[in-house]
Image 1 (tube, helix red, strand yellow):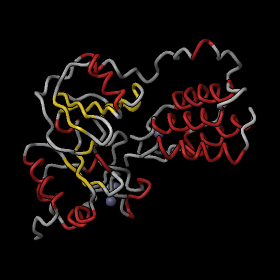
Image 2 (image 1 turned 90 degrees about the vertical axis):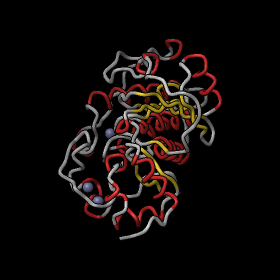
Image 3 (image 1 turned 45 degrees about the horizontal axis):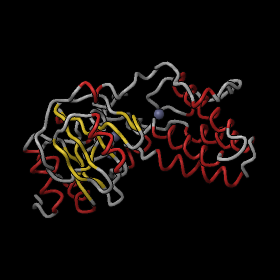
Image 4 (image 1 turned 90 degrees about the horizontal axis):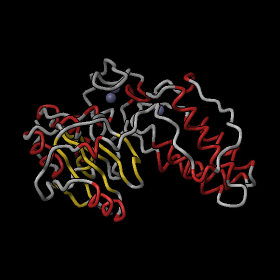
Length: 295
Ligand SMILES: [Zn+2]
Ligand SMILES: [Zn+2]
Ligand SMILES: [Zn+2]
């Protein structure tokens, strides 16, 4: 047996003993990569994933889905190897019956102070985590700089924080719109042009948890936004659209056909005068920034 020779493992064991499922994160704050047999979810995924599979991999593959409170797993050889290379500890809030409202910047924190009940608060690099008792579905970008991390998501452990934890309020649950929600009205009714034909289908996106309609509708709206920028700003709009759309897939096991989506955003940007290399760079960066994949 190995000793508790990583400070992260020691933290993880303490959390696990309190009923909080934990996992190691690499230095880049991302989960460790999947092992060879789990790569591209060839294993089918773990039983607790949305597309449930038979994976029993002993390594911490599949991000949040690997999170556990079992000290035998946490101190097993493949996990100890991961703890040694870890840069931080993450936990699965939903698995601990918690919801983390991740406020990414000062503006988001200021908004929360006016809109949400005070609860346990943890300081993060640029903002705060507000932690509520109760689990809910996760969602990214529910408002500018605001993510909900609960079920099927992980959050970085940055200490116990301060303040008294309260029950998950309706105000937080309401931040998540239903997936097939009515189209959001675009800025100033600007967007009245023809809907763009877009392509995206399951064949290249075997690991996407969204419906075709959902993905296509999002892509159509994004492309319409880019094409409306006939005067200026189409490049940064393309970046924003790519980032937003990629962010919708951070909880999919993947692949999600994001390159197909990216090509269509590039085409839209080029059609309103953005030089192709610039459009390509903006979209690639956007997909990368938004798509910090959870598994
Ligand atoms: Zn594996
Ligand atoms: Zn696996
Ligand atoms: Zn997806």
